[in-house]
Image (cartoon, rainbow, N blue to C red; front, side, top):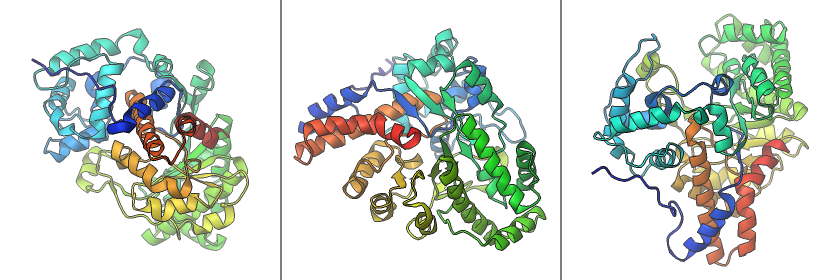
Length: 468
């Protein structure tokens, strides 16, 4: 008989005497609206508002948390339907789904298992676990569910209780889909300005993107001064479209500004295709500082999440492209790297920077002390490899004693997997409920304070950080 799928009501809550209080704290936050102000769901999903494709395309192929686990156990990327850069179709969706279900046991103990069980049971209404035996039955049930009119992307905004959702958009995005959607669904989905592709001068295709940036801004980007003016103009377009933040995914947190003459030289070398790796890295750090200058002017919250070596396996990247699970964390230094930026803007009124990391050794050593003294700094929620039950709990334990609760942003879901958003917020609220209940049990926090903090972590801090 297939194993029943029934997530436990006390999942992720603490064991022992604190559990009853944790239940009550979680009950006080579980129905609060979701503010999804750092995410990567494709705007096209909402603009088209078309039915989702099939279970494999919805739940397996685009989710690198899922595919990387399967690849680590020897499953070929082609069997998982990962699209090749050549455009070739690699697998039948039903076969992809069968492969996933046959390997369901691999996800035991992982956050992916937690999120997927929540999605299967509470979003899709499934009642049995995936397995080789149940794969076809589940495929058909999910296919029927996602074909229903109330399962369109816009309808799910209401069902998921999402008050506001931000996408992540390149500096060279014309925002046409955002304009269309805002006319049809005002103020519900907003853009976030991500300039990475135009500030890393040694990336393939950079010069073409710089030219495109200039065309969109109607500015000549053949000079460094014109390039800065174009970025500033594009930011204004994003602000007018409702953007509240920028997003920067650099390898390093370095923010040392360059003299104008040096920035001009490096930029000119890049246009000629002659930029060195060292100069490109120095320019990227310089542009983080310039982004802070611009954020101090236009009020966009600056989000920085460094410390990932992207595309660790060149052959996978060459065949399947970016974002295929082969991005690996590296040791990251913040204290010295951010000093130039914080010397200038750490106490500047109206400037805010949110710091994320996948190197949790920096939480208590660097990030909490920085957030605990600079008014401009907030600590983002545990990110990527750390947005797990253990990672979230360790974040609270390592950060709170130095930075408190109110120098953090509350939870942001940071995902491309739209259906997982409620599960991710629910997990964060459960972990926070458990942490707060333990503090009360240890007489380190009053019970009424715990309920107030829980609501702040679930909703108010994100609103304060991003919406002012």
